[in-house]
Length: 476
Image (cartoon, rainbow, N blue to C red):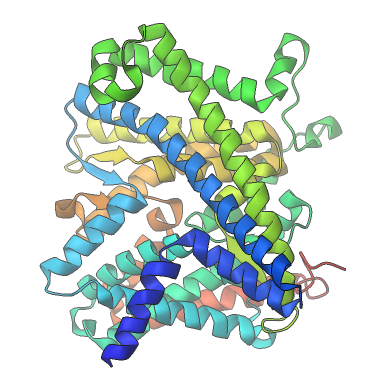
């Protein structure tokens, strides 16, 4: 048993918790199945790993640009609250598990069971209608840990191996079904690039795709997927320019309100001896730089991932698609939609937080960067594709509101307030609280109902598009 545990620990520490390596190894398997030459396999591995690391570099830089603002807001108004961000959620869930005497290794066993269950569902796709393999390793780690705490809290009698198996089936079903729900939307956005979204706002992606079209104007000219601007505003068609200017208008104003002393306190490394206006401009341009870096990494790793996955989808898991990080979609559609989605989502969050303050909520929420940016930027892309600017505004404002209010409800239901963090992404502010409420009152039957209910969704999808269901995103 110790040998198995040690092998699993090595796999977890060096592969599953290292998303770049995990993606690279999937590329290796795919190219081997395609019978590529060894040096092509090696090159594919390197390009996939380096591409993902470049994506991570851009993502880290984006986070470092926004975090000082969030910290400054917290200090300026002396707000003490729960932070909604997957990284804080992971730490909080680990602390919560330790508080009841449970080792965090239970959550890693949950991950293993969930991933195997995802593979099983795809392997038997003829019956399950599941087409997507969840490959976003770092997301899987966080979700498995939080889900383990949720079930152990709500159903104490399942704090054993039976419970771990049930949690694994629940997580694996969620990964399989909701990434599968993004296939049609992502193939339309990316013009058949051959991947789906495997992240934490998959329900939001489906909603924006399904209902965004309600905002489409009757004029055919409004059907363009891009936000077209005329006259002097035409310069905003360049997303580097538009991102910088929008950030100046939005975050620049916030920095001015916070003042130079506060910004120097929370961001001393970047502020240095700069004049305040120069610091503001530099921080806003760095956001655009980070997006360029992010998109460069996306193009590298997605290209290798999609091409190599043909080997897996053509042999081991025929007809399957990889479900990857939502950031992979940012090289498609209108680039301005990414920035605007993020900003309108932020406005929605601010409105929701103001509501909590006005109504004197016993729980206050501090926004984290990951839900704030990645959820709303992604939803903005899909909403804009289906219904233009109006759909983007409506969906992202709604997303921001729900992220705060839904997370507040979830934090109270799952008792994560004392541990200071929660996931906060849209799926975890909507779907998971709903499932949690069902499991709280129905216990084990509630969990079983959740699993069966989710497995029904691909069956409904298949009935609506039997002809092309298993060929979407496949190379001819």
